[in-house]
Length: 271
Image (cartoon, rainbow, N blue to C red; front, side):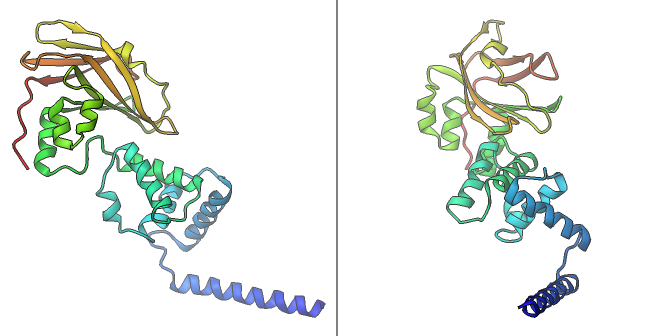
């Protein structure tokens, strides 16, 4: 019996050496070295089953490439399709539960955060080029990167929902009775507490009249508290007022952030 186990051990060791030899001869690990590749593979495998160790940026990219762009999709398919933080979360869920991607909860969370950080969009990604240009010119405003807090605001009158096909949301938020804004808050480094946007925002028209928010509703919040979306509504401002300004106060990095729209918003006549 002892001889059997010794022979089995020797056979297993020979198989191991053969596998290592094949790996070093045939497997292309570029741009990583082979030892670096093996180390990353070991750490990612440990993370898969235990959630430990905490992966750094390079190891997270290794996990993403191994799970997404080497097995299922080309890099272009994933990385050209920028999405909002909520959309990336839904994409990863769909890959797992509809298309059968083998990802643990730990891996799915890590890959979602990687996509949100590196391939984020705060405007719809399914619009035509004409529609996107219209959106950026007339409805979308942004304030990038002050104190690592990226703020995007979309003015959302009925024209916005006609553009994006969200007629049901137009009714849900009652855009004919209120002035509605979609607020996107994204940070890659620091967590920040849920903002009381109904206490921090004020809307001004061209005559200097100021309007306090009617309500603020958080519609999405990522698990790591780095991404939030919400709906901010004010009393309806007439569309012929010339312009309006939304002021957000006391967010991290600046005392005030100001966003301005010329009114009225023209009718979209593109494709």
